[in-house]
Image 1 (tube, helix red, strand yellow):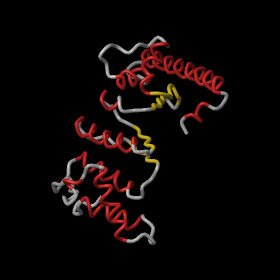
Image 2: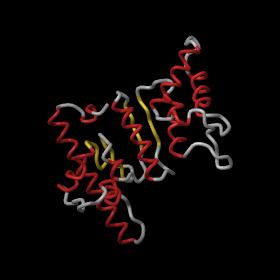
Image 3: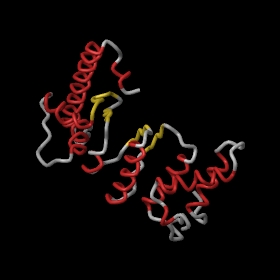
Image 4: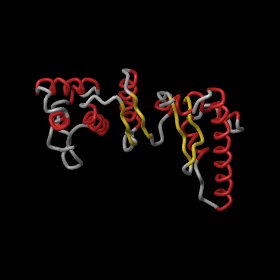
Length: 213
């Protein structure tokens, strides 16, 4: 993004460059207005993006503008790499609420999330957990705690489920003993999920991943 451009100008550049040349300019500008409204950027539409040297929009608004640059083409699928990183909890939740609204309007949104607070975790529909390159969970986010509890790893009361999952599946290298313990746990979780996936495929009589894609 360019610090000296306003939010509207930044999105207009994306629209002019990426939408079909056959599309009338007026229609492209209407698409820009729609994206500004969808992302809740109306109040800062004519504010400069800014940078570290020159003050502009907030970090959360800047994240939404970067998403808007992609939204001008009205894609059915959005892939977001850590859209909340670098934001405080308030602005991170604002960004994710915007993503939730877009998902409810029919788009598919896949995102990697860094240390989500509990309110953000509750927004997830489906969850994929990877550890050391292995799948240890794929399914409903709401069912994740119950699944690990059945394996002997209950989530403590009043604990953020996201923190619980990250603590459970992370490899600790603080000592050789901890590394061996956590590596064994990850191997157990991977093997357990592999068996669970095969059981689900047998019940559905089709590859389990077909339910999600």
